[in-house]
Structures are given as C-alpha cells and as structure tokens.
Amino acid sequence: MANLKEVRIRIASVKSTKQITSAMKMVAAAKLRKAQNSIQTMRPYALKLQEIMQDLTESMENSNENVFTRRKQDNRVLILVITSNRGLCGAFNLNVVKQSIDLIHNELENKYKQGKVDIICYGKKGADLLKTKGYEIKEVNTKIYDDLNFNSASELAVKLMDDFKNSIYDQILMVYNQFKNAAVQVLQTEQFLPIKENPPKKSDSAAIIRKHADYIFEPGKEEILEELVPKTLKIQLYKALLDSFAAEHGARMTSMHQATENATELIKDLNLSYNKARQAAITKEILEIVSGAEALNG
Image 1 (tube, rainbow, N blue to C red):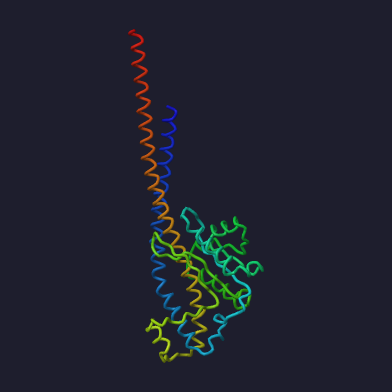
Image 2 (cartoon, rainbow, N blue to C red):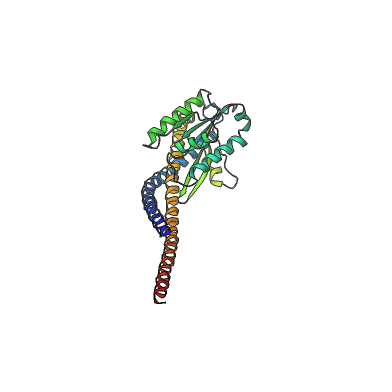
C-alpha cells in the first residue's frame, strides 16, 4: 500500500501543476492579444517610415553628411540583447543569447578580443544567461517592460543616438525575437546605427520607379532628413521591443499549453499505474484470505 500512497501523492502533485500551467496559459493568451494588436498596428507604419527615409537618403548626393548615416571606423560595437524578465517561455531567451554569442564570436571576434564590444540587456533573463556563460554586461534594463510605451522607448533611443554621435560607439546592433504568430518567433539581428541603406532589387520595379521619381521636397531634403532620421530610429527601437514583448507571450502561451498537455498524459499514465497496483494489492489480499480459509478447513 506504500506504493499506492506514493502514486496518489504524485497524481495530486501533477494535477496541481496542471492547474498552474493552464492558468498561466490563459494569462499569457490574454496578454498576447493586447501585445499582438500593438505590434501589428505599429509594424506597417515603422516599415513605411523606414522606406521613406531610405529613399530620401539614397536620393541625396551628400547623404553621408547626416551624422546617423555616416560610416565610421567600426572601432567600438554595442550589442542590444532584447529578452524577457520572466522565464517559462521555452527557448525564447536562450535562442537570443545563442544568437548574440554567435555574433560575438563570428562577425565581431577580433573586436571582442580587443575589448571593443559592449553588451546592454533589455530584460533580466538575457543578462542572467550571459553572466553564467562568463560575459560581462555593461547595463541591464529590467523596467522597460513594466510600462512599455513610445516615450520610454524614445528615451532609450535618444541615449543610444547620443552615444553614437559622440563616437562612444561606431556601430549598434540589436538581437531579438520578431513576432510572427503565437507559435513562431523569428530571430533577428538588425543594425540600429549607422543607418543601413538597402538599395532596391533589380526585380523590384516599384522601388526603381520610386528611386528615379522627381519628388518636390518642402522645406528641403536636408531639413526633412534631420527630422525624419531620429524619429525613424525611435520607432525602430520601439518596434523591436514590441516584437519581443509579443513574441515572449506567444512563446509562453505555447510552452504552457505543451506543459498542460504533458501533465494530462502523465496523469493518465499515473492513474493506470495506480489502478494496476491497486488491483495487484486486492488480488494479493484475496489470495491470502483464501489460503487462510483453506488452512483452517484443513
């Protein structure tokens, strides 16, 4: 009967865990709905704004005069590692950390050995994982997700832009999970600064028409670019944070759904084991009673 008691305790424990994972799945689903609406609303605007800025930059003869488009010596690099503050979301955070480490030891190997690579983490989990692997973190921001909005993202973007203008960093990269759907997150490595020009593909006839179109700019290209570039960079960082935030809840909802299903299967297996053990115990007791009765009759 001791085995039966152990199985009963384990069944109760797994049922309790299942209730927790099921509740966490529902909470993540509710948060995902709001985060998904935010990123889906923001993404078309951000992409269009970036497209306008690139078209404007390419159409200017002296586009390198803008401080944010100017190519520097690439001496010092900053990597923004965007993860979550909480776990229980599968490999969401680990994938970003692995991508960051691959970036350091492949593209930035020489600079890292020279001590010219800094890491800033937006999210506690990324910082914890990197620290356990022996990487030094310059700064950790865990409050950004407490009230994620454009103003808080703008403050971070302004600080990054100031560091770039003052030549503290010559290149700034972002590593994060882009939200695709509740079950799929796409790892992204984007260059935040300097602004990367993306010339149109040969097959993109619409882009070629835009490039050669004779636009009339008012007040002027330079003035528009000076206003547009900082705004686009703020939007770019805000979009990356929204993407990561939505992807986190999607990953957590999927992970908790899988955990709930696993708990259901485990409970079935434990119930089967319990019934088998109970049947064996009853059979044993019956045999003992019959044997005792036969002994008395003999």
